[in-house]
Length: 233
Image 1 (tube, rainbow, N blue to C red):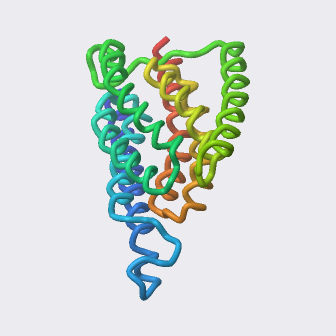
Image 2 (image 1 turned 120 degrees about the horizontal axis):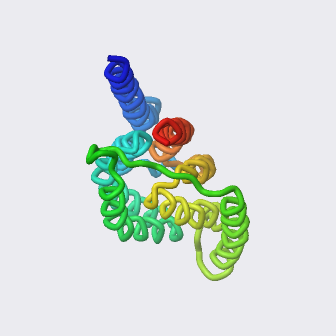
């Protein structure tokens, strides 16, 4: 009875969280249109594609925070649309990152399927050692600096260092997520904060709103994954 009550409460929070995130996307898309006599405000690159990507992105991360394998289905659409947006905005590292996401999502689906709890739709998470986490953090920081320098020197990337610091850590976070390590949420939270800055500077408010919501979701996902794993162990 207690387990059923907890599950119903979780479903309730899931839908509230999801609807709030989607509503935020519509506000971010339509508010600039309503507040301006122009079709799009000057300097704003938000398009209907950003709205579509944002909605599917909200679905994906909320499902991921629950450890639900269906997040891969929504994540695939979000990845394709986000890749196009990144290319149009001259964010080439992030474009390449979305190609990486597409390649790894099929593998991630396979890994998660074999870690499902009692063949439910929810994956069983695990933990990294503190030493491993520190080593990963140092390597990611150094590599991000190197990639940012290369992008600033050899490409016309509009935000080379922000682009690099949201790309290199995301590769690591994606791999940790695929392998079901709960620490991937720490990395995603740092990335999402930087992505808010990046897309606000690019003038795409749907993408900005999406990553702002993802910051909240990453915090919730970390708490939810760790709590459920500790209860199961």
